[in-house]
Image (cartoon, rainbow, N blue to C red; front, side, top):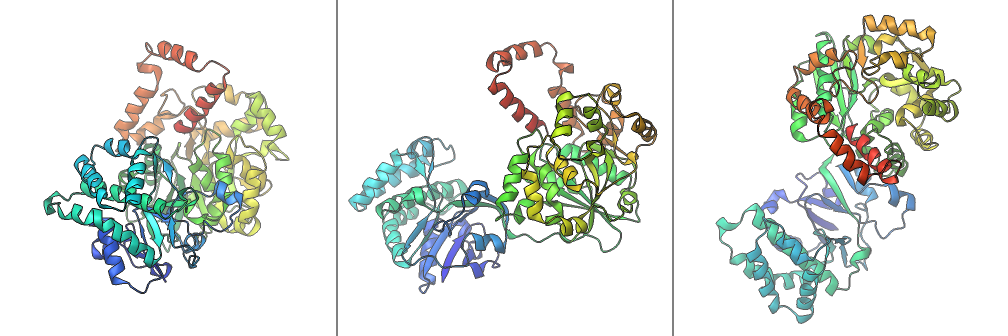
Length: 577
């Protein structure tokens, strides 16, 4: 039987995996040494003990052979725990009997441990000096190892699993240093910063003890970071009746524009229907989440979902996301292509980009009969333009590399009515991931679904996805097939959704067509001032005098045509998206 105290766990729901909360007995406000003393004294019949620092688990299956594919593409951090993840990490089996101590891999601090400690303004320098004096009383071997490690640049996270006899030996050494060190502290001195200082010194001590025991830290267990130590519960439809599910995707940077989309959805909604808004994300701050939740009403729900919780053991998923991420589009956009597989309780859903304005009740879109096809989408006039010469390079790509029989039937993925149930039946998860990896894509998830769904898309009224075509629509429209041009002109007279496709957005340039619809809604957003600030900082309208100087510097550092310039461009586009 294994018992591991984790500073992250707040409930007893993980006890069957040998993981126990630190908060139950006030462990979170104590040093590791105090936790360990209680742990050993209380449970004398345990086979192995462990303590994990906040935010970490160890991959206890690190001794087993894992495929290079998994080690290459599986992430080292997860948004939530799951039973499958804990099983994958080895928490359902006992450690090998010969393994008396398991620690995590070491990492490089890029400076000595002493220098690193001294560089932390909130760490106690006095405590470090007292620690150095205390180690004199130790066994000479351990004392010499600690002095050596203070001069080296390797460190570990405070995570271990030890056999009881090894833990007793470890604590007997620790007691000689930390027992008196803690006794010297006055109760009112103990604050969070001092507690962190002590725990850091304890980590140095743990690393030294491991070296004394001849543990190869380079071959240690992989530390896994967990953002939320709780089991993720699969999302179910929020409302029992008249539920209109809507899927958005946003990074933390894009939150202001996501808020505008939500407000436009609400402005066009009716009190008769219920709107179940799900936002795919992986980095939105809690503060921004709270601001977005202010849009909630009796019939408006807003929830957040990080889809990485579902694919801990699916390297193909991470490989596909990594492949998608080489373009200017943020990876979070690519996650939504997998929504049929992580929204299993839903049969249909509307997914929307966050660069658009909704002007008609989305329940009307949701109730369109798509004749049993995979999706209802609008034809992509921009891609038609590429095919006809507006962008010869992209036109050639879509003719030769898009894997579509008729690329003129390419659909835009900014507004999609998705038949999740049908997709799950016809296109299993593994088949979809293989399709993602078959070729390099210009527009990742959009190119993939167009190739995979060809012949199974119902083309819906163009008013559901009216392109703005930036600030020069005549150029793009000049290449659109005549038979679709009149349809577009009619749609612009009464657009149900305005979609600001392309790199030029209304929050960057006021000259973008139909930008007034965006700013009308944006004025009601708590992010309005932030959007204005970004506009004036990021555009040339208020800084024309400095731009030539900047361009001159950039040209020197990043010569035109150089690999450095291409690489920086990719990063720049990724950040903007």
